[in-house]
Structure formats: structure tokens, C-alpha cells
Length: 505
Ligand SMILES: Cc1cc2nc3c(=O)[nH]c(=O)nc-3n(C[C@H](O)[C@H](O)[C@H](O)COP(=O)(O)OP(=O)(O)OC[C@H]3O[C@@H](n4cnc5c(N)ncnc54)[C@H](O)[C@@H]3O)c2cc1C
Image (cartoon, rainbow, N blue to C red):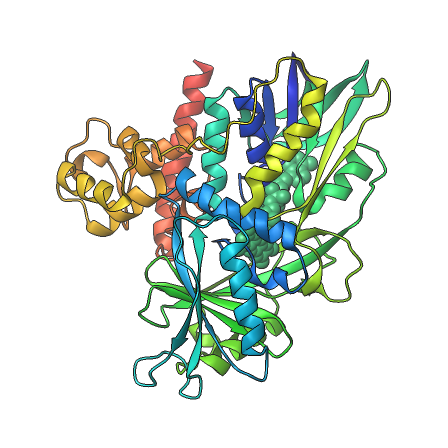
């Protein structure tokens, strides 16, 4: 086993949104940071979300005012930090009086409008639907409208990882932390990857392993966990675009739950989610037939267009690892986060993250840093609120960036320019350096994916497999057929072999 003698200030286990958020924040304060992720970045819960940056209207019902206020404030901050991957979205809530009374919804929306600072997003309003224009069933004649935001969840993770790297952090994927021990108040962290095992050392260990948080504490760190988690599965289905409006619908079901229909990647509608207790392996979470039927039923109760299973193009599923608060129902377990610090005298500190939302990852990271900074001298101050994420530097408008790409890159398709502008923001010029025509972008894999972009993703964004590229970095996974994926796989294999030979030489 190799020994890496560097002693990092912080070692983060887990490359979901919470792990990379903490790594970026810590690195930006001048701490030396190492992060390991056993699979790809964002390959678990952080890419299986409903892709919303939202206050969580429904959490008001459970009196989670702290969480809602923090999340509402974060919407505005994140919109400025990453306007290429986060956009405002209006939500329509059809009103059916037998579910929640109008006064209750109006009160909820009043709080939602006023609980946090709201500068960029429009407030709520009452709406009437005209039967001939509305995608909703004719008997649904009125409702409410309010604002939240949509996010490319996995790119939010990648951009935070990039920011961490640019601040000096070492980010390693496909590397499993299999054991941690302490020696003289320093953590020894054993990492296993395809090439073998090695050990790194760190002063503080951060357990941001999501659904594995208690397992990591118990089996890997051999520390008793202060809290238990409840794994709550949530699933989504993707169908062809159901309606032309660029708005989401929030449907109230008679079990008091809500389901969203959200415009997705211009051509699709994303429908979810469910809340189901989960006890199996979080590595392999799959939608159940019961969840499929549930989501189809809620949609069919609201929309004129009736969906069947045959309309489903894709499904995905993930688990929320929520701090167990003994709620009776899966849907009412708190979505707030809890941080615990294990630190006995002469022992190295171990911080663990329980729960959380994508929306509040930045605040969670700040709280994590507050807890660990007493262990260091000269730690920098909070900085992430005002700092933009990679690609948002000098980004005045995504539409203007699309125009610039169209002017500079001859023969580029509009759809590709739009995708690039949203995925990479102004970092697109790094990919397109010295390029003025699509022909110079190398092998064409289809749907505007060329070798130049693939090489960039492998070189700078930790992409290894075609799934990393199509699902989590470009979102072209709904377009590619099996043969096109095989061609991309073959290219990646050859690329990795070339890189390996270069390393050996
Ligand atoms: C269905 C659903 C919908 C949601 N919708 C929203 C939404 O719209 N908006 C919102 O704000 N939030 C939403 N959430 C919540 C949000 O997705 C999660 O809170 C967030 O993604 C959790 O991130 P994480 O980093 O804690 O966990 P993860 O993303 O799961 O990351 C943990 C990582 O740790 C790695 N790991 C574990 N053990 C080890 C080890 N020993 N060594 C190395 N790596 C290890 C795992 O591989 C994993 O990648 C939703 C959640 C679900 C399930």
C-alpha cells in the first residue's frame, strides 16, 4: 500500500452536492483539501432530485420556517452565482377546494413571498384558466401561480468541484474510502481505486456520504452515530413535453402529497416525486411499479392529456437520507440538515452531514466550516455568497452568450449553442479556444457532441465513461441510441489508453 505523506487539513468523503460544497468553501478559505468519491461526482442522490432550487412551499405546513426562510434566501443568491445552470420558473398550482382551502394556500403563498428576500423573482398571484387554452382538465378553472427556480443538479455539483479544484483542492473520483483510523490525532484515510490502495492523512475528516452516513460512522470510522437516518425513496418519470407553456405545475394529491410536472430540456416533462420508505442498497435504487402508477394517476387526474406507461421515456430514482425525527409518514420527515461533530480529547475531529437539500448546500457548507474552523489557525472568512461559480464570470446574459457562439462558430446548430451556453457559461470559450468552425471540433458523436467537448470533460471535469458525459455533464442521455453510445465508449477507451501511455512515458 502506497503512503501519501502530505497531511491535508480536511479530507471530505463523498462527491455529492454537500461534499463538493464543503470542499470548495474550505479550499477557498485557504485550507488544504482532499475529496474522494467512490463513483462519479453526483452519481447518487445529487443527480436524482426534482432539480429545483426552491423554498419548499409544502414545508410551511410542517412549520419548517427556518428551512423555508434559508432556502428562499438561497434561491436569490444561487441565481446570481450560477445563472447559466439555474433559471427562474413559474409554478402553477391548480386549486381543488376539496384538498386545501383557498385561504390556506393564499396564507402559505403570502409567507412564501415575504419570508425571505425576493429581488429577482416575481411574487405569487391568483390565476383563472380558460378551458380551451389550458392543458388542465376543464373542471379545474382556477389556481395560484408563484416563483421558484430550476437547476441542472449534476452540473451544480461539477461546478462546485471545479471551483474547489481551482482553489487548490484535490478531487479524486472512482476512489472508495474503505477505512479510517487515527494516529497521534491525525486521520489516516485508506482509499481504494482500480489501481490499488493508498493512504492519505488529514487533520479533520468530513463524512458527506449521503445515504451512507451512518454506515460510514459505524463500519468505517467505528464511531457511534448520534442520529439515525430514514432513507426515503423518490422517483421521477420523463415523458415527451406535455404542454407548451414554460411553467411547472404543482399538483396536490388527496393523500396530502404534491407532485410536480416540470419542463425539462425543452422537449420533455419531468414528473415527480414520490416518498417511499427504503431499506435496500442505496447504490441501486429503482422506481417501483407502484410509484409509476401513482405518478401517472396524479397527472391523469389533472391534465387533459392522459398518459400511459407507454409514454414513459425514462425513469430515475434516488434516496433522501433524512435525519430520523420519528414522523409517521415518509413525506413529513424533516428536510432540514443536521451536522454532528465527534471530537474527544486528543482525537481528530469528524464532522458528519445528515440530510439537507440541494437548495441549501451553500449554507450547509458554511455551517460545516463554522464547526471545523476552530481546529485551524488563520482560516479565511465566509466567501461563497458573493463568489460566482465557474462559467458565470463575466456572464451578462445566457441569450447573449448563445448569440456570440453562433457568430463565432460557423455552422454550429442553435440547439448546440444553447446547450453549451447553459452547461458551461463563459467557460465554453475554454473548450472552443482557437475554434471558428464546427469542422474543427473533431469526431462528431451526434446531437452536437464533438471530440473537443469530450476531451475537455475528460481532462477538466473528471468524466470517464459515456454515462458520466451523457447523463451528468451534457444531459444528452435522452437523445443517444445504443449504437451512438457504443461509438462514444470506443472513443473514450482509446482516449484513456492514450492518456495512460502518456502518463507512463
Ligand atoms: C427524489 C428526490 C428529489 C429531490 N428534489 C430536490 C429538489 O428539487 N431540490 C432540492 O434542493 N433538493 C432535492 N432533493 C434533496 C437533494 O437531492 C439531496 O439533499 C442532496 O442531493 C444530498 O446530497 P449529498 O451530497 O448529501 O448526497 P449524495 O449526492 O448521495 O452524495 C454522497 C456521495 O458519497 C459517496 N460515498 C458514500 N460512501 C463513500 C465512501 N466510503 N467513499 C467514497 N465516497 C463515498 C456516494 O457515492 C455519493 O456520491 C431531492 C432528493 C430526492 C431523493
